[in-house]
Length: 601
Image (tube, one colour):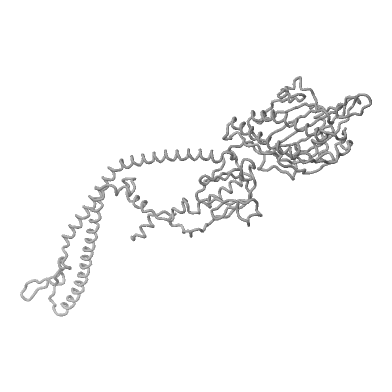
């Protein structure tokens, strides 16, 4: 059997697979599509156009910008792909200290991306099984020939006596090869002589049959005239074939093979004796490697925590890596920064104005597809929101600042804080109509609402009702929120002429085809009402009613479902801090806007 045949017979079927040309990926398809990528803790998740091609993952801001070059790329050869333990749509891709946090639109798309990336990595030739199959392993061939020890061939060379025995085996092999050649020549010579003798014998026998009738046919002997016997053919002596001593060569051949077997036995004994020593060394090296790997993983995790603090794993959620105290501190620090920014922007606030519709516009709900729902919400707020906070309602007073009081009722559902909040306040110099107008009209929204990042009117239903979509500024580590709600403003006439009319703005969550929830924000649900009544004190003498004679009583009710998990203590602390600030800021804004202007009843 030739060396080549021996190689192939010892290899597996995988070694016989067709080889791929370098750089050519067979059976791998390119993939592209929209994935949400974590940008930073301010902007959170943003949709990006991601392209997987030639073992490289690249992303663009949008599909339209692919011709201008990518925003970033990763070579997948050494990348580590980690499906998130809790988020079924998320996968993390890390190369050294660079990490991409990506989210697919659903678990199926995440699975598709992971499979495609793994295929690209497998066919790239780095550390893949297919790349290892392309190269033969002399170690595996040598190991396969020995059933006495699991020690690698590299360890054999480290024993002095073992090297000597291997050298002896090389010498024996050379001797044995020469002896085989000699014996082969001898056997070939014997075969040639036998053929020549047979031809000669056949010729002599034919001649004898013609000339000597007294020839004996039963044997090899012929009777001469003197009565003696003479052998007809002379046998060839083995020693006559090229001068080879067959018996001596056979004895030498036997001794050589015996020496090889003895040397092999000695080698095996040496390897068996050294196996325990090498196994102990291997165990020590394996233990040392395990400790080094554990130290490396620990250091890498610490580095990731420092380098990527603010990543998606530190966002709000029951599996967040940030503890509750750190969460609270981070939220409070972010809110403080927003307050400082608001103080600076108040100085440069643009004065806006919009026409005020006549009061009778707000006397009816209007005609649109949400009319019945608006009427239902208005009646509920008129019935329940104006009730006294005493009795069995379990309202707790959490803030009291002058005329303003804020109450809270603690409610949790599936671990999510849903505490209803209720605030009462009295503001001099403004009417209920004016307060509700500035609260409802989106023209003034950015002047007093500091938590909104952007908003737009999705649909105008009537003169006093519209559907609004707005995203709120992200307060890290909380996720960014968005809200889609219907905002309606109503005037409720008093049943008694001695009672004041009631102005009301109710905002409640709805669904709309043009503002579907996205992975970028957590969709919150709200049910909020601003209820106002105007009290007028008679002026002295014949003086006209001025703003000094009017007082607006405000009742503000908020039922908010944050749409996701966050520590209860943090949510309640933020609500306790932000709601009073919001009411003071808004009412001060209304007083500023109406000062010196005609009273709008």
